[in-house]
Length: 105
Length: 105
Image 1 (cartoon, rainbow over the protein chains, first blue to last red):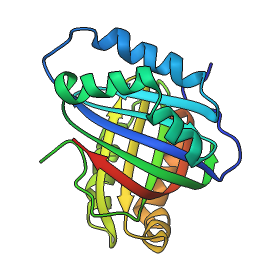
Image 2 (cartoon, one colour):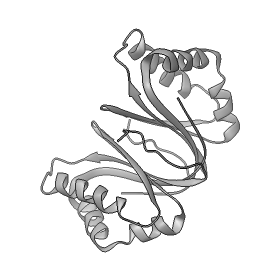
Image 3 (cartoon, each protein chain N blue to C red):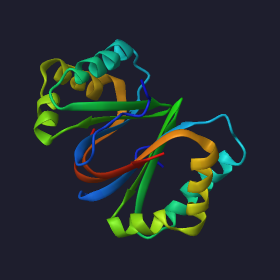
């Protein structure tokens, strides 16, 4: 599997999640892996790219805004978001963007 | 300075550059740093976030598409893109996206 998501022709959507981790580790790695596994099973999911140093960036790609809304409100994901806010991240920002064009090597 | 870009209220634009490095190192780190320095001086530049493990993601944020077009065709940046294609990356993908909304911690 390529590290770079194999997305279809635009337009499609990107959820850009930029975050800085706290010192609190409890359950973080398991939940992060589980959320990626769960996202891939959602309707409209197109792919994901994720990297972390001190800053982490995870971009998930989606076919449409309704799929993103459903993912945002998925029960297990809501619980993970709550843990993220309260424990795992000192800072984060989520951006919802419409990919209008792309080009590759 | 926060690691997470302090962007204005949407809408604005994101250039998402996802890449996998080759083994070739010549000049890469210097040019990567120089490109970020240079981007910050361009009209319409709003911020940048960059992370690399095996996969690298650099997202630059811009006020409008015309600013992105100017940056893409800036002379020194064109030269860097050529080196990237020919030497530094085994794979990459660039996506131009319109940020429609965002929320933060």
